[in-house]
Image (cartoon, rainbow, N blue to C red; front, side):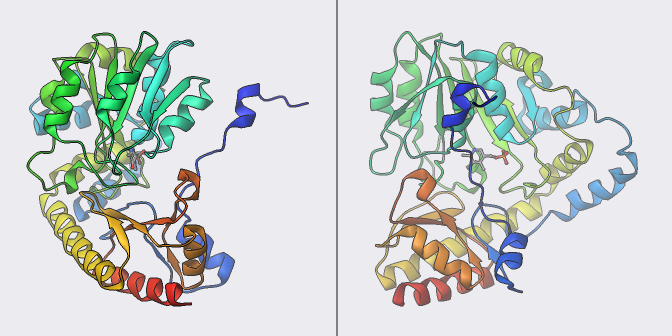
Amino acid sequence: MSLARKHILNIVPYESGKPIEELKRQLNLKEVIKLASNENPLGVSPRAQEAIRKNLSKINRYPDSRCFYLKKRLAEFYNLKSDNFVLGNGSDELIDIIIKTFVEEDEHIITADFTFLEYKIIASVKDRTVIVVPIKYFKYDLDAIRKKIDKKTKVIFIANPNNPTGTYVTKYEIEEFIRDLPEDVLLVMDEAYDTFVDVDDFPQSLKYLNKKNVIVLKTFSKAYGLAGLRVGYSISNPELASYMEITRQPFNVNSLAQAAAIAALDDKEFLKKTRSTILEGKNYIYDVLKKIGLAYVPSVANFILIDVGKDGTDVFRAMLKYGVIVRDMRQYGMKNFIRVTIGTKKENERFVRVLKKVLQA
Ligand SMILES: *Cc1c(COP(=O)(O)O)cnc(C)c1O
């Protein structure tokens, strides 16, 4: 007999990208690169590092529970008010906060089948029902989602750009979708990768905040290079934010994260370099994939979903032996795929070398 609540026993926990140190330990390797979790390959913004050093001597104190200065800075950045923001221990925590704040026991969540796994996992932990709608041509199918909305629907999660496909829904698609969205349904636009996007028809989601019940999620983990510190945030109208403020843990964002996030937001140079590194790297990898005849999904984010034409888990495992960690897509149920995060030039070249070697074997 188990002491855990019954529904907990059926949940497959989130499998994170393999940490570098773990692979070094397991295979006794010296040089390992990780292209598995869509992190920033350029390291940490020098300004953020300086902010962390300055605040190190103060961590005997609890962090500012209200994240006053970070909210103030974000409000300036987006030309909004502090009460439009809720900070979280990564945007992962905001997904958790949203579900526990808004979704009653008998209400439903809708998302896509091949998308960020955390929506489904966090909902399962909270024993909430998730309706998954198949993606179409690797994209969120908003028409199909619209058809699934009924009286029980409470929250719709859309990752835009989508992870793991790297595709996006356009502003035209989302505007039509929002127009028809019932007043009592919340739309969550998870924009973890928006900083990498360079297309004109990507939605400016902040325009929708006052039209319907829209919550936009952003994170410092990807382009801003602070994945290890855990800081993300939601942007919404103040009323929705005020409910989320009730359910979050009081000290959910630590003081180093708050200081570093403010500094990272100001480091335009680091961000610019990050974006150009990703664009160049992505084009390089696209070229190679075309040459060796592998299909891939064109991506507006900092990763590429690749059809390796055979079992992706085998390819993932074989690459590990050469010290290259990519993302195994098994947990996503995408059998012949791997997902690779764009790295530095050197890392991309090593990825290509090892991929070729493994596929030839
Ligand atoms: C990486 C990722 C997140 C999580 O980011 P954190 O802020 O590190 O929790 C959220 N959504 C998507 C789609 C992601 O890929």
